[in-house]
Image (tube, rainbow, N blue to C red; front, top):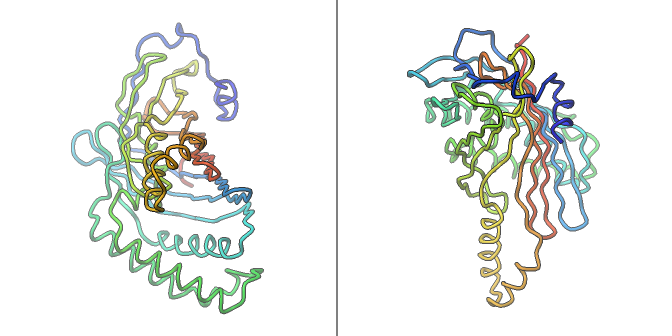
Length: 331
């Protein structure tokens, strides 16, 4: 598995402790450098019973690191492009919803966002959130108002014009409402989730095979609530010149227990008896895990590549995500 990760990430890495003797000191990530272009390619496969929907969302950001308080960093991020491709969705209403949401997400291309990272490289919040939210809201409302002129947005849909208009109205209203009520954790999870990995190793010192943990908030896909998990990172290899490091990644947290608790609550809402609920949960296949690999530039401590797979399953409902992140100097 480690060899496969190394090949996928295109890294020429070694695993002998002799060549990685002594701790590896990752940079603080705040030195002067050109902006970075961050390309996120996320493929989602969602199964409900026998129906499987798949799609790939590609987001491109331009990020510029700035210092703030000692040890802390701010990163100015602007969405450069967002698009959906490789879509296999049977329900035309679900496909239309996906296209409309991606179109509305394009409003962020006009709004620079400033992300705050602490001295451990953790993405903590959004600077000047109240003002930022109002700016984003205005951009989204303007983008929503221009949708009627986008004749090609739903070209090929089998839905009637009335159905298209009705669904678009619902999605626009829901999207605007989400932005107007969102707090930083929700906004970051929806639009900038992968950028939590960008500076995650900055300032760290690690021996070969050593592990560090970074607390994080994870959204429960079954009810939308947030819970405490951790990123667990293990230094696996470095290259000969000690310019790059390969780290194994996994998500740590009792996701199975959390899913069971959520399922039990929903079954109680459905007025099932306690014995029936117990049998139902015991017979249900439940999983929640994520793992992968990161390539990090040692001098700057900044992410170069990531390849992460996650899976959440509760019975016949399953969400599988494959995320690939590439960081290069912005053109």
